[in-house]
Length: 180
Image (cartoon, rainbow, N blue to C red; front, side, top):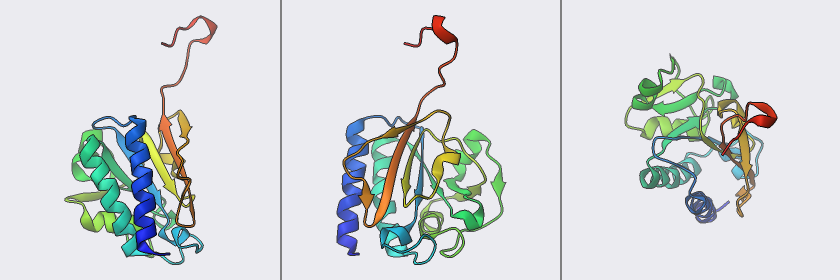
């Protein structure tokens, strides 16, 4: 898998996010990413820091343009814990857990984010407003209720399947309720 192809595809994905005009300042976007799946390998078997860097740069540029907060999901070896900036962790009062992601225990994407962020911490659980799941990493546990799938033209990144979601408030109150 050529890095130029991955770069082009992640740019297209982030352009779709921008054009959807959903993401608001201080909202949280969780990113789960298997760089192994991107290269056509089984999740957790062939992580790539080069691919992680390419994706991180484009997602970080999106953050700069929207003001959203980023959260990067670790792999199952760290119980899918989340890498966030300490300022975000403190704002939401999330509990810090004691681990440092590594390529083989946490995954390349979370490891790259942890090594690159200004003041990273690992937290066990979040409730994000939006999500991008690259390679079927199961980000659903970190999305607010109720998750709604988004349909973007780009449905893969390299060989990895990509799923997008936003969340909305629960509809409560029954037949007499007015929602909007």
